[in-house]
Image (tube, rainbow, N blue to C red):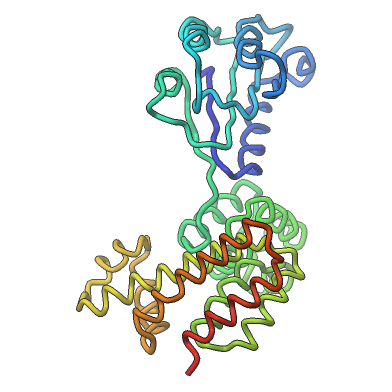
Length: 326
């Protein structure tokens, strides 16, 4: 395959994938001759990338042309489409054309359909913070790449601690690798001692709110802000957690007992989690959980409009805790 399209909002994961591709394509001795990164600010960036991809490689290795942050899968003129149709099938095996974008390709566009025909397309989107099973899978995959051995408890705790922040995940894994060397298996105690928890505290915040513990919840808000945790990420975790609790509660109130059915409705990949989720929401009602969503939506909108993060979070957390205050 000589054409690749990487897209998604996980910039760090895309960056690592680009580095891997570059290492596999370019000969280090000839990289300065055979590597081009073309930014969208450059005049006729797409045409320039296509022309460069058609240029024979110098010396050893292949040529790599990286068209960064392109919008060709969001808008494409007829003239540009004609150039893509003419060039993509003709790109030589000695060249690799890489396109990256932060936006999801619009499959209705002819340019996207053309790339689906000729390119290998990979998604690099951040995993929602509440999809814990996928986060654990991501941790295990990254640990294997870095060369770190984690036991099950350590992998789960690391996933809880860093959430969907892949940059922090790799930073923490490199730290753990230095600590353990090449042979030792990392356990939960090592993760507790060395890893700076972020999403774990966001999930603790959700639990404190559910229990109506206002003082504890406000302390967690202060801790998260002091650790520079992005406020919108905190809100995303809260929304995901309360939606999950609400789905499980609704299914329980409807008399559903099949854990697989509940897991499917709540988009939980591991049905074994349902037992613990049931215990967490046993003493609260679906009306209480439903009441949290408008407040969380107001919180998200306020933050996106530039409201002060600390005071806004504190105010809304107090409102949320009052819903569950016993």
